[in-house]
Length: 452
Image (cartoon, rainbow, N blue to C red; front, side):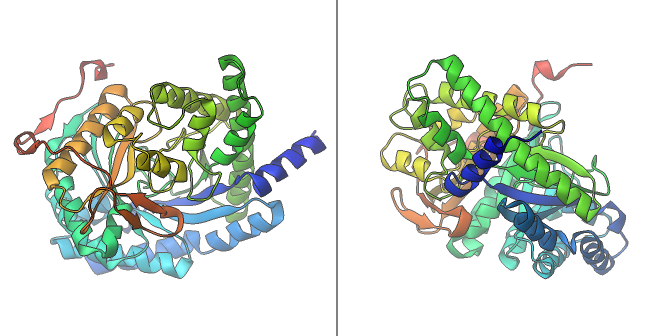
């Protein structure tokens, strides 16, 4: 039986502490759209998306009104485009047609973003994969709602360093071809990418998934920060228990929304991603949680330990609230989307190297990092390789979403708008890794990957 105090507590979380459901993401399989011509594939993609997602936005808005829970984004993820287009795409512009079709469908349906302009690599590339790579900058320049991702490695297969090198080149080209380098905010390199992630830009509908599915991403760093203020100075046991209990409550809200969306849309419920995803809003910051734990600034000694504690307790609380937890699930540390992280960079407490150390224990990796516009493709590839290595060795998902800002210098502030916020341009190492990135082939899987 629901206690009235629980209802009032949830209402307070929504009204005062920025609790929301960050996204309802419908995954749609496009495997059955493959055909002998690009035009035929594009026609089938549009028909398939309209068939399943026509009521997605309206249903999300109805649930918001009926339950009083803000649902910030309604999104779609699809089967990786490199797979869908492999049967008939003979040039990069063929893949761009698919991106345009995805974008037009997203606009028609009213969703915020559509993910899945993606390729899943870790051991080698097909000819179609290479064409897909070539298409990425043009596709992101020609669309506004399409998000692109490339998985470049896995614990089981190693890291495809040819894909890493190409990814560095495409990030630089995308920055050059899109206004304010904004295309790079919709482009991410991953290692161990999950099939069911509802968060952009890395969302895609994995080939292991069914025909269609509803995945929900919850948030709530403001809620966690608020409750920690009430136990300031408590011991670690109390601290951990408080975070865990709060994560449970947050996840239950997401579970309710996910089940209701699944019922109303007639699409199976997939997973809850219980990540603490910050926004530029005041009081909705993971960095503020780290300060409340006891750090003067994120980046101070003890930061990695505090983040590890937070991430672990969020997961422990979430798995008790839902039988189907997936995606990324933990704490995000994007710079541009978190006012507290921006303040830490401006104070000199956070560097890219310290952020990289923190990614060993958080949900994803280097996210929404602005760097000088003259940063080389090799340097960006080296940063991607470092994050992929962390993911590969530690059997976790890691990612890099990095933005070489055209004309940007260290210390400049670049505005992206909306949930993407703004970001300080951060310094990168002046030392070169070009000779390493120029090597061909792949880094083999670690010894502990042999589990059979």
